[in-house]
Length: 155
Image (cartoon, rainbow, N blue to C red):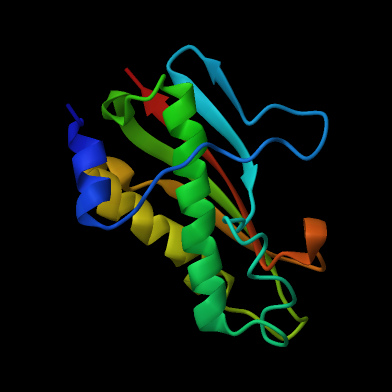
């Protein structure tokens, strides 16, 4: 039987698949005590990396928001693995850290990272509200538009 969070994901039309394998010498998450630290997630899906380039140039702000939401879905995939498949163990999204690969003139980094922040609240309700930072970067791995990491509290 699906848990409360799995049911909510189903309502939202979100399918959580296995997380992507790390691209280097790190692990997708670390659990210490009641905290889960999720490594930075990029907007990768079954088609590859659909959001590559600089926000404000090759990537529109609207597409960057979609990229941030996809990063959030990938965060949830790693989190589900960290929770042994039971997202109902999540008691709080503690913090998100967002990087936006933008042009020097682009200054709407918080609006982009809202794509992930809004997803956490849609999925977890009040427990999805979190502390956060949103920064611009001159480039990101594989020239993706967005990368986001996260910290969660679990039971």
